[in-house]
Amino acid sequence: MSKIDIRSLLFEELQNELISRGLPKFRAQQVYRWVQQRGVTSFEEMTDLSKELREKLAEDFELRNTEIAVKRVSKLDGTVKYLFRLTDGETIESVIMKYKHGYSICISTQVGCKMGCTFCATGKSGFARDLLPSEMLSEIQTAQRDIGERISNVVLMGMGEPLDNYRNVLRFLELVSSENGLNIGMRHISLSTCGLVDKIYDLADRKLQLTLSVSLHAPNDMIRSRTMPVNKKWNVEELLKSCRYYSTVTGRRISFEYAMISGVNDSDACAFELASRLHGIIAHVNLIPVNDVTGTGYRKSGEERLRKFTAILERKGITATVRRTLGSDIEASCGQLRRRNEQGGTL
Image 1: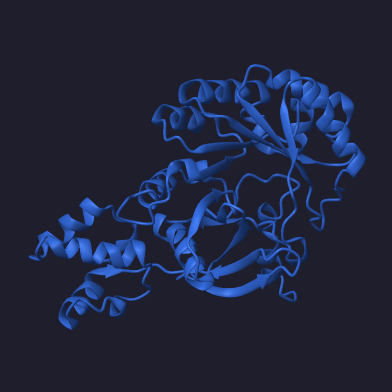
Image 2: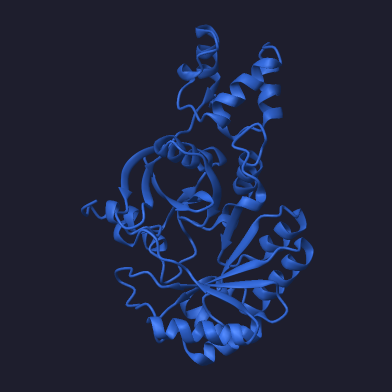
């Protein structure tokens, strides 16, 4: 019989599991604190439990951990990039960024990705599997333990499409925001999607108060379908309709991610069309100079083009900013380090 993934259990579920094994109710609080708040990697670390109880827990439950395979620290801004190795040997990436308000972590939700966006390094490695809630939590716990600081903000924008791993992501959100766990509030969590429209509607109805980031990257179907295969299932009009619903139901502003690709989606005409499309949505546009990913042939837009694109959006009443590039000297955008590792390159 397979062991129970203890880090993926809600407090009430763990309590029921321990009571069913004849243990007193208060043990659940002790064990949950070790697993969720302290992020232990073995039952032996639970020093206020008897040796007998620790052995019993190890028989019935498993702790799915992430271990640091590679760590890179930017000399430019202190950004930290990790290549984590999972229990089954698969690898994922996470990035820690330091801001004035504290530390943010960008975590992965899948090993690889199915979405196939042409400008993204992650998709070029293919898809292996979904991450479990426990593994997403462990990314935060391992990084937090390594830097010796509390992480206060979480961004689900690493490897994978969060809404394609919807059930596990919802469980992760419940766990990470629990007062008995890491206690990171929903308003400190951002979730990025390339546009799984059915899940956006469902997420809106849950009214979780997290920040939704939508990877738009184009103002029309002709450009978006060429760079993002998901657009062939849900086009720009359908996607923006779901976004309007989300912002209306939740009252939350949506952040639209827009990778600026020279000669592809960065013209004045694209800026005017984008502004027209977003009219009436509580929106913010995050302009991102596209990453230099080997094999794509894409080049990032120049500074003057970025300024002009931003000016057009703002003139049309759309708030826009150019994302500050962090960790450029350590390939901080997700997917690049794992891909290099798979190809046997220098890490």
